Image 1: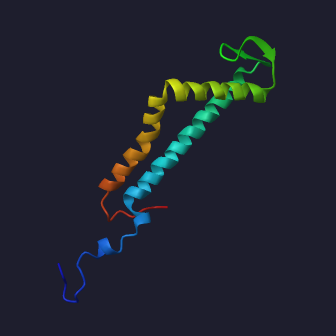
Image 2 (image 1 turned 180 degrees about the horizontal axis):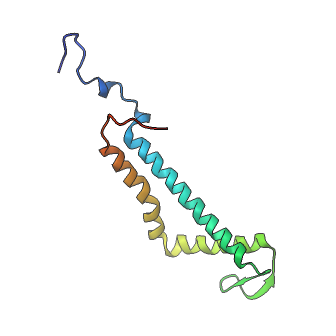
Length: 120
């Protein structure tokens, strides 16, 4: 629809900045939530490893007998076990957990009215 000055009446579509759309903003927010979830999971594994450290390494997977090791080796083995478990046995659950926040945030951003300002 044209106004009297020959300019298209839908100025909002012409001036939209694609990097500042609501859907993109909320998608980035969902990705930040994913990064926080991964960081919290790693932190929980490290804290749990520190609390259960008794000066010896050994598990069913790595060594059936317990041998002395330092804290860094113990934490590395614990992280390796959780990564192997997550990637090889529970990959579908990890995938769902990591895809859910960005997708939900993206669709929330698409449904937001355009008059609500974004806060950076």
